[in-house]
Length: 352
View 1: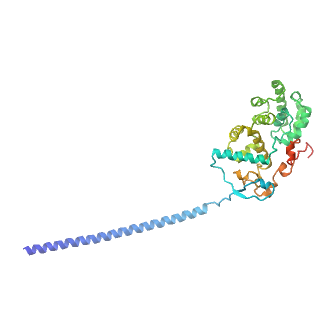
View 2: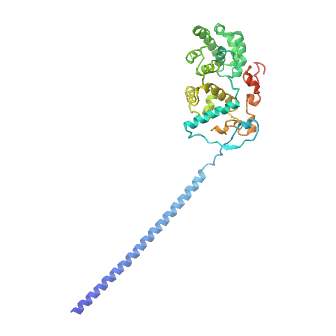
View 3: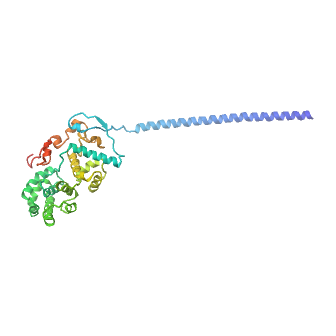
C-alpha cells in the first residue's frame, strides 16, 4: 500500500513538473513572439516616419524660395562721391533697434549729412521775413526754383505787406501764373498781407501760434519762417523729409504733425532747423523718391533701405542732382558758402 502511494505521488510530481515546464516553454515562446511583433511594428513605424520626413524635407526644399542677395554698402560712402572704390560692409535692417540705438543712428546720420552739406540753407530767395513767408506759401505744389524765378517780379512791384494787401488780384495772378494754382495762391498771399497789416502792424510775427493764423500758413510754413528768418528752431516736414525719415525708419508715422513730434524727440531742439535742411537737401540731391542714388550715398552704411536704388557707384553718380551733379541749384542768389563749394546759381525765368 505504501509502495503504491509512493508511486502515485512520484507520478503526480513528475506530471506537475512536466506541465509547468511545458507552460513555461509556451510562455517564453509567446513572450518572444510578442517581442518580435513589437519590434517589427516599431521598425515599420520608424520606416514610415523616416519616409514622411524625407518627403516633407523634399517638399520644403521645393517650396523654399531662393535666398535673397544681401545688400552691401560701403563703409564710408563719401568716398564714392570722389570716385574711389570703397570697402564693403553688410547693412542690417534695424527691425529690432532699441530706442537708444535709434537715437544714436539718427544723430550720426545728421552728422554725416552735415559734413556732406555744410552749406545747406533754405532754397528760397528772400531778404526779409515777409518775402520768406510769401515765397514759402507759393512753394506749395511746385519747386523752389520756380518760386525763385517768379518772386523777383512780385516783390519788385509789391515790396511790402501794405503794397500786396492793396494789389489788384488779376495783376498778381498774372505774375504768379508760372507757380501753378495761381488763383488760390494769389488769394492766400493777398489775404496774409492784409492780416499782417490789420493784426500785426505790417510785421511778420515771430510766434508759431500767430503765424498759423495767417491765410495759407500751416505748421510747415511757420517753421520755415521761424527757423530761417527768426533763428527759432523748427522741423520742416515737407515731402522730402517725410519720405526720408520713413525710409530710414526713424518713424513709421505718416501724419506730418506726428512725424514732427517723433523726429523732434530724437534730436535736441537746437538741431531742428539744420536737421531739416540736411534731410531735405539729401532728398533732393541723392535720395530721390523713385530711384535713389544708393551707390553715391554718404550714409549708406546707416540706411536700412540701401539697395532700393542704383548701387553701382558710377551709375549712381549720374543720378546726382544740383551741385553734386554739376547742375545749377534752386536759388538765383545763393549764399556765398554755397558758391564757394562749387554750387551754381539758378537761371532767371525764361533763361533756360
